[in-house]
Length: 175
Image 1 (cartoon, one colour):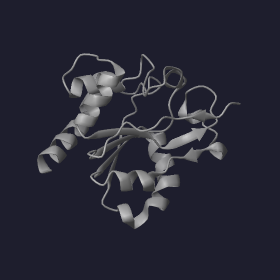
Image 2 (cartoon, helix red, strand yellow):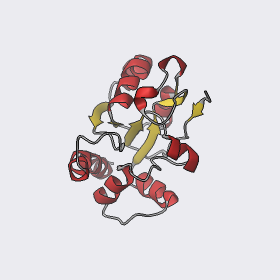
Image 3 (cartoon, helix red, strand yellow):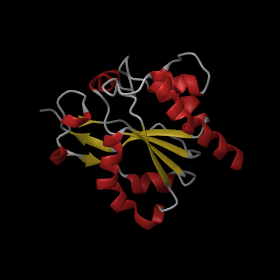
Image 4 (spheres, one colour):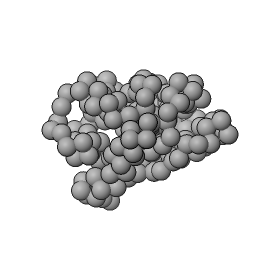
């Protein structure tokens, strides 16, 4: 089985919000950008939150960074057949370097998990490493944008994800 390797974060030094997934899907790895599966709700949710039509990936990156939003994954690499988080071989995971990332992005105050696996992996593998130095961070799990998570409709997911826009707007006002 081939080792899958994730992407660099979408982030600049002004980021106040971090959205964390677990590991890019097969479609994302092939396209070389986050949330590339056509049925993944991430970009439609961002379009609804920021009142924009679908735009190119570089434009999405600029829009998110302009809103103080960073996007990354908990895992740097792993073995996983297919795209389902449930198929991640936990014995093979390599985590991203969050201590360095947080030091390079001192304005971060909120971390939002895109689904349960990102939260679970973070709690198990990252939280013990970041410790008291980053105790100011607030965490919240949001419903997964994955097409595999069908317990909520797109409008329900958009409603739950409103906290992203509210936080980003609040943090921008406070600066």
